[in-house]
Each structure stands twice: as C-alpha cells, then as structure tokens.
Length: 69
Image (cartoon, rainbow, N blue to C red; front, top):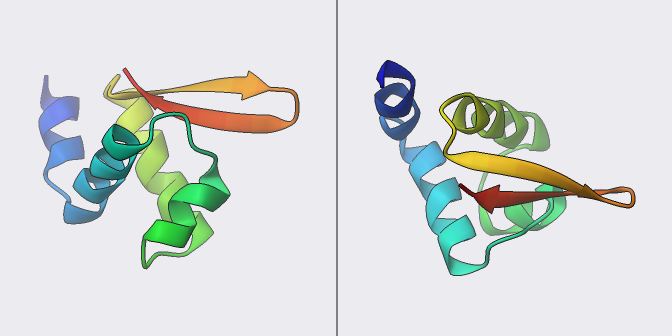
C-alpha cells in the first residue's frame, strides 16, 4: 500500500495516470507529447507506477503500450 501512496504523491505521476485514463494504451512517445517532461523522467515515473501495480505494459510488436491496471 505504501508504494501506491508514494506513486500518487507526485503531480507528474498523477498527470500520467490522467493521460492514460483519457486515452488508455499509449506508447512512451505519445505520453511525452502531452507532458512537459523528458523521456527519461516519464520512464522513471512509469516504473514507479508499474511497481505500485497502477500501470501495466504490454508489448505489441516493437511497441510498448502502457495501460491503467
């Protein structure tokens, strides 16, 4: 439960979750377009969200899609 609260404590991670809620199943590039963050920052935020089981990733060919869990 601590991982969930830690993940939700950051505004950037909440923005990522809102973006996925609006359009579920986005690639890293699509998420970066809508947010004012570098690709590395978005990747780190997504890793924390995955560790909290809030986001899951699915590979489709060479694309890695991110979904709300």
